[in-house]
Length: 256
Image (cartoon, rainbow, N blue to C red; front, side):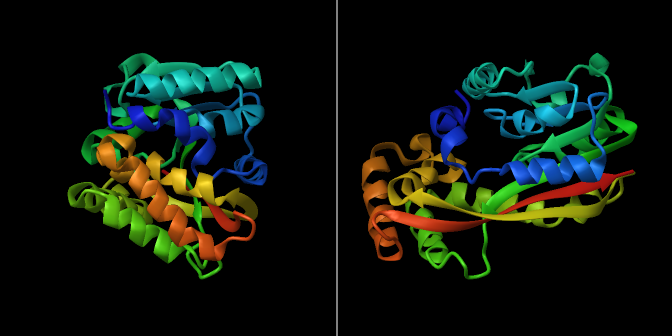
């Protein structure tokens, strides 16, 4: 069982969502079309792959976790989309998989071996293709006044080793030039879409379970106690059990 197996049932509905405006903006900027082929590395339940589906032709999702692929398969069926799924790490993809016009990566880059990934991109990205490193997250500029306490409670319940690992992952995503240094690829552009939505205190607390550092596997018997603690800290920021969240959805565009 992989570390995300216990999060698969929650991930699709509780992670910060990518809004339709995000996919529309990225597709427009990159001039995606029915002739475009997309591969999504670390696809999880297919959030990025299916979000871009209306704007491309061929779609492939890659993930090493069978439970995540099952979630992606069900989501594709609900959406009526043809999504090819491969159970694999990105680094172990077969050499004959071909080249793609757009390679998307969500919160997965820090799980990938850097040297192997850079070699992979050389053959996976078409000559005029791009890599889009994507994330959707709560704005950290003060418009989510509950966020600092939320993250503090998450950290208190997370095993130290896993929290430090997650922090290293955040740094990887924030410093893409360092990741691609020495390769033929360079971050060239950033597409940002800001949205707001309402989320219940109950669901925001359960979102904690979708992170590797505070997954049900990591927390063990402490899941219910952690959820109660998070809800208690969120309650003062809510109205009738609901919190308004400001989200930023970002695609960093990497080109040769």
